Length: 258
Ligand code: NAP
Image 1 (cartoon, rainbow, N blue to C red):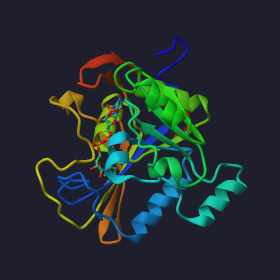
Image 2: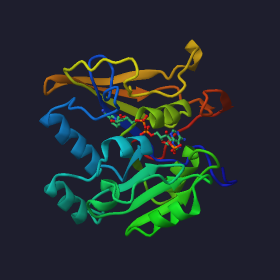
Image 3: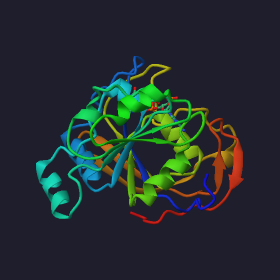
Image 4: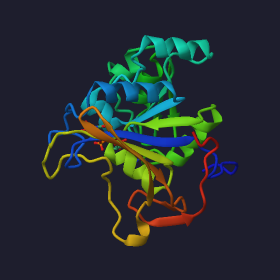
């Protein structure tokens, strides 16, 4: 963390995920499944269009190969009229610079991409990604990507509203470090099953009551054949490392409350 970096200097961060009734976000093969319907796809597109940046982990890029673009032409035009790029900045959290050069996120749609790597990344892989058009590679952290540093860097670049689209490993890191303001979960009318199928939040997990991330329900609305749940995170008060140990206590507030 730089000496001028303050825990409060980060965007408003929200997670958006779709899960099955049994709490899975994909299959045991970690392959994408259709969990939501047309109305929810449109809601997600609207959320993307209203964000300054969209972030995913490398696990999601490798499993789903998403482009993370705004699909509606009308919404892209509206962004342009407001003087914004037609797509939000797309951010991949990728310590070892494993993002494939032909990944959709690097090749589809206009706009800036940021690949956040750590000092572990091999120079050749970093160079390979940095050579792609509209792609910047930033180094944050030694082993894995230092998410606080990355959020600070995004904040410095004018990112006020950051949408996180998974997966569960990245979501755990953000939540356990108390870097998330709101969580939107679409619960689709399907059962996926499978003990090892990914969930909205994986990682090490909490073991004590006092560690739990506490939420307040904002809304619960029927959508398509499922339910959209919106939650506000309440206890922004401690910071943890990847294993879940408390390493510092502070109160985090973002610049823009959405
Ligand atoms: P992920 O969360 O997308 O990415 C995790 C990876 O990011 C880590 O393994 C690590 O890989 C890298 N990383 C770097 N720094 C990190 C940090 N500080 N904290 C956490 N991760 C860091 O991967 P995932 O958990 O495997 O999730 C992918 C699965 O979720 C897929 O099955 C996909 O289909 C599913 N998914 C579902 C939805 C939905 O809404 N239904 C949405 C998204 C994804 P390195 O060490 O190599 O950097």
